[in-house]
Image (cartoon, rainbow, N blue to C red; front, side, top):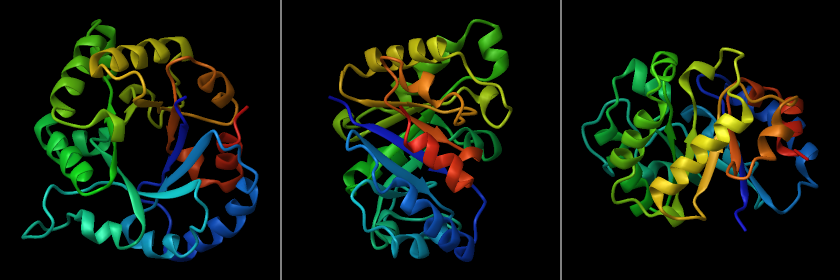
Length: 241
């Protein structure tokens, strides 16, 4: 049985003081979370140490918002696995659409990050997804196939999470129909060839659509942006039914 992973990506939000206030409100709301799921939050790098002092629950884990493919070196603005593990980080988001778009991250770079994350003892959350233009041209399956084949080469599917995030649905208020998202997640599972790989959906996930999303056969969790910034909203998502 695949365990659901509910992940929140805070992006460039939340100071250390904000993080402390958030967790003081959020933690009591997930004290009775069912044991069939894990909760993960990716705070900004500056708030990771504050966050780590509060994580005394085996169902709440920390993710980083990126990771480099070397332990150390002249890589300005990057962060290494050792720096993260020191603060109890267990997951690393890799290949999110924003670094792909704003910093021209390639599938080759994303693959290097994912492989090194695994070899360092972390679980990568590798994001894939098509643009609206690609979807309208009927290229979604081709784009996803390329991203999976190139981005996940030489990775261990037993220590991997893939997040399907249609770019046109991120932060737009538009949500991919749950059944359509499920088809893409099933495609990803077939491409990887490992039935137990964890596959999430991300893209305008909210408390009012989480139950339908999580009822799908091939969706094992969600990667949440804006709705994870509110502890009440995210606790409802974490406590999906």
